[in-house]
Image (cartoon, rainbow, N blue to C red; front, top):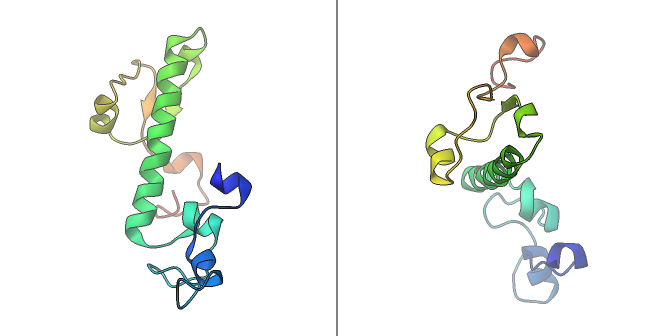
Length: 114
């Protein structure tokens, strides 16, 4: 809700209110704002947290869809390891693949981009 109302406390806001000496992100030293805070910081630990937050949300969505009539239509996911899925009591059906995209699907991308 704070993001939607523009009141998410960032380093930029701290600087604006005189509570910080600069408005840059303390981790990556890039200009700080709400988008940067939620998904733009390139600091390794933040990137990993953002990825895991995405995977957790995706696993919850898959878990809910599997309970419904259309859950069997999900054929491909990339939502973390089997161990992480088990921690959320999510067991994918046999015909659902959970892995990175195969290189043949996007032949113009390098392995790193995939």
